[in-house]
Image (tube, rainbow, N blue to C red; front, side, top):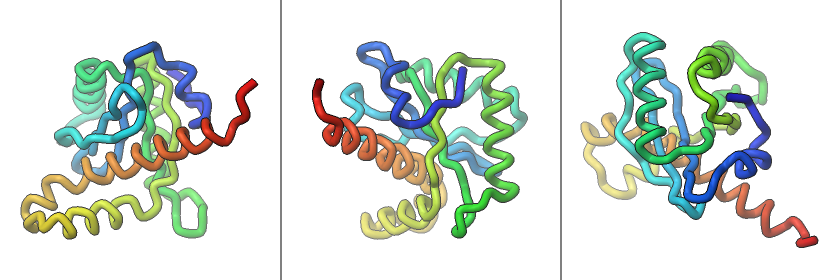
Amino acid sequence: MSVVDLPQLPAFLVAGQTLAGIDLGTKTIGLSVSDRGLSLATPRPVIHRRKFTQDAEALIAACARDNVGGIVIGLPVNMDGSEGPRAQSTRAFIRNLERLTRLPVAFWDERMSTVAAERALLEMDVSRRKRAERIDSAAAAFILQGALDRLRASATASPER
């Protein structure tokens, strides 16, 4: 596995593969998966965190089930753009994951993703209890959808040769 810039990620995919979006929390790992056309992010059940090895195995197994060819992980940067302890923890998680999988990873600025996911769940009138269960996967879907939209926009902005 290698860390790549987002625009490079589709080049690593084989036909029919999807992208996974991850919102790495302290208690859960929010997960979402794109469709094969890389247009729409769909939330998946969260992975409850235990130890790194168990978390990584569960994540890799979930990616295999959905034919994932690359990962977009939310990087929790501070509002001023600096990286704090949570961003360092996310980078460390990816460094450790690199030893276990060949999937390429791109970081995505996740500022406000949980807020946006919470707002969307509120608009859908999801109960407080169900919001708590779904927020991390909704945030992962928000992260992945932002990355998919950026990829699509940059593909349409690039002149054909």
